[in-house]
Amino acid sequence: MERLIIRDKLAIERTKLANERTFLAYFRTGIFFLGSGLSVLHIEFFDPVNYLGWALMGLSPILLGVGFYRLKYTRSVIRKIYLDDLDEY
Image: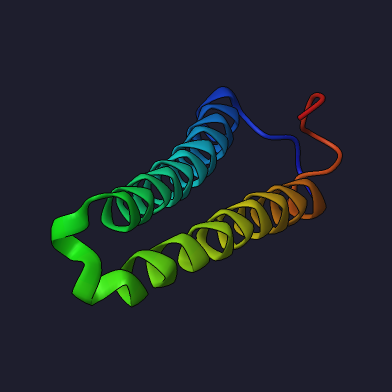
């Protein structure tokens, strides 16, 4: 494989940053679901729909896990494709 030029290296950096932004979006959504679930469980007005609070709290770690898996998987793909030309990632 030929050496990467500066434009290609910058494209790889943008891809890495996009990967991290995607993880942060999953993280933010997971935290939002956790907070919403706790709110539904603690407000008496929502007693008839307590199951919704538990469902939201159950989805929170799933979202965090999916986000973390995607972060690691995409990072490994980037390393695999451009192993020789990437600095420590």
